[in-house]
Amino acid sequence: MTDVVPAAKAVAVVELGLRACTAYDRPDAAARLTAARTALADPVLHVVVAGEFKQGKSSLVNALVGATVCPVDDDVATAIPTYVRHGEQPEAALLGEPESTPQKIQIADVRRYVVEGSESRPEITGVEVRIPRKILAGGLVLVDTPGVGGLSSPHAAASLAAVSMADAVIFVTGAAQELTRSEVDFLQRARSLCPVVVCVLTKTDFYPSWRQIRDLNEQHLTTHCPVPLMPVSSTLRSRAVKAGDTGLNTESGFTHLVKFLNDQVGGSAADRLAADAAAEVLALCDQLDAHFEAERTALADPEAAERVVRDLTDVKARVDALKSAAAKWNLTLADGIADLTADIDHDLRARIRTIIAEADTTIEDSDPADTWPEMEPWLQARVAEELLDNYDLLRRRSGELSERVGRHFLEASSALTARLAVHDPTPLAAVDDFQHKIDLKRMRLAKQAMVALKNAYGGALMFIILGSLVGVSLGPIGIGIGLVMGHRGLREEKKRQVQKRRAEARNAIRRYCDEVTFAASKDSRDTLRRVQRQLRDHYSGLAEELNRTNAQALASASEAAKRTQQDRQQRLKDVDAELTRVRQLRQRALEVIG
Image 1 (cartoon, rainbow, N blue to C red):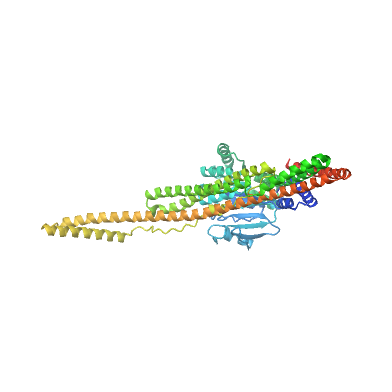
Image 2: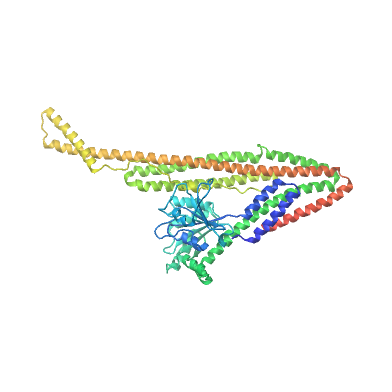
């Protein structure tokens, strides 16, 4: 899947860098190069396949890999994500929490857990299927997601959360009709979260007018969301794979989609990983170059040796300051995390308050007995959408903080910035544990009759007794008054029960929002703590590397000042040779970056 040329060059350069670490006694730099080599050897490229229900997402994944790995059914839809990746042997496993161990299952049992109405457990977050396929061998992972069900649905929020962590998105829409407003809205949100998005028009073999739909969709995409559109037929692709028919495969349209994945996903990921690895080698070259240049200056000009030693001693003091808690980058990190924690928490609470206010307005204007079936999914969708926006703010602000800390560190060190890893928000974006305790039952007819009779009897009795006290017989008039009183009492009782249901609905919404706020606040604080540790450990490690580089340079320069003229000339030749090797390594790393 990945382009082997930049990857192979990057691996060769990293191997040379590791040899240099061994030769120059730099195990600290070797740790980062080893991590880069591991990333090159086992890249993971997530491609999320999203779209509305029953648009052919599962069929598309099956056609891409040339095997039936995702269940396809006309009557039921996918309920949980399916991750299709490379494996030496076909196997499947149930996925749970990140820390839990996948539970292996038979390939034939995948359907039991994936489709709606089948065996499902809350702790199962997805199913992983591994099969030996060339298209997956480069690290490609196809993620078949549940239908989004419109932009304002919990499924849509969960899909967008997965999109935010993906390397590319394939948005699937059928040829039965042109793109809907909700589909275009989803595409716009997906494009803002993931840089690589393609829209695929499926079922072209089933609808004769698919070309007209294609033209309409291209107009919508050009106007609202400029992403490529590719018409395909999963049925033709599957037949072509079975028959080995190249012409039929071209007719299916999948050749363009596979090329897109190779070029835009695999190629760009390979370039990025290669560039990251080469950048680590360049950082090593910078440190080795500084070391040998200082020694060379001291060797070439004995009178300058004392100045070089003095300068390196000053540098040592600055590097020591970089490692301290009072360093500018460290203070920026600590203050930034504190500010960001407060801002994210405030943003979340403000969003939840807005939801509660909207819910209160709806409840006040209606009877929960009538509106609650629509209110519950609406609340879940609104909460999921706001959680995703809150997470997007966290991710964006964390990236800005990382860059700011990096700039402050660079002012003193000229080292490289870190690539920030942010927590996957997908589980939180699909919060659906809504346990309400609302009595939504209306009064039965018998109870209404009893309430009316009770008030009618009480009203009639009161007026009859009052008439007897003043010596006036009301007769049938008393019965009429009783009926009026009964109707009024029934109306008041109905109003009281509606108010009770409204109060219970408000309390249920507040309890749900409190639970969501509690869980999301904990998750965002944990995420920010992880970000803080990542940045702190990264820059502390770089400061240690700089300290080691400076210490070696200082020792070499001090020793150079004590050498005889003959020793200096011999050592100068050795240092020039080392500088040549370091610069050759630098040149090879620059060629990888391009």
